[in-house]
Length: 266
Ligand code: ARG
Image 1 (tube, rainbow, N blue to C red):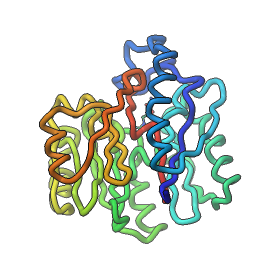
Image 2 (image 1 turned 90 degrees about the vertical axis):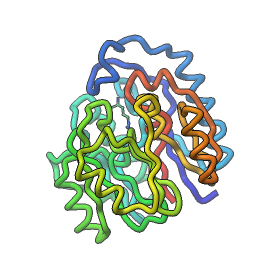
Image 3 (image 1 turned 60 degrees about the horizontal axis):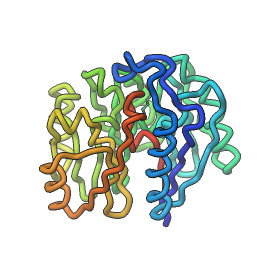
Image 4 (image 1 turned 45 degrees about the vertical axis):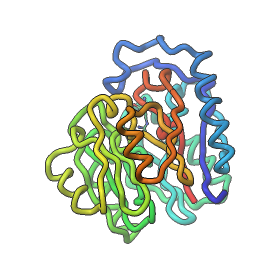
């Protein structure tokens, strides 16, 4: 178990404002009991395969459950997010404190440039490069800055569909240079960059994309996902993965699924 995962219990989770298209018309509509149950049913199997740690939310941070957006770990450094929307900015000090208390050095990015952590920055499975999504939440200037500061290869991708406002909603790096993704979320140049820099791609249908199938958590050879069509499951099985469907409908109302509920590092 050398995979660490940070999760945040949904004690204060709800849709209280709208900052992405999924949240429109969902204000006040989360079934809190069901959300708690879905979160536990996801947390339990994960904790059997990874070292799952918890951060406790405080009142007034209904989206803090989406720990993918806490920031980014790079070696012994933690790079805190700078949320685009004021509604989430009060999460920043909580996450920074948690990582500082764990002994990470805090590497601050310049102020006033938005950066939403592992929602938009996804390392290749072998860590050879970083896939970086931008336009809606993470400013593409950050991609350039990360490449320079971290001295690593960054492939900058441009998101064009507001339903897929974070890279992890439509893109999932798998093993051996394989990537699962939804072409409809990217401009043409980005699709080209993805195809050029992978050994193989598995593209998902509109239906799978809108069920946030790409928002999957990969541990060992298991892919935890909210939903996947028969044909997608077949393709993933053929690649050697076992698919575990863990439904998170209540969190989809806020525009996030399984991967958004986790933040992982080695
Ligand atoms: N309501 C949250 C937001 O709009 C959802 C975040 C989902 N997280 C993610 N990594 N895609 O910020």
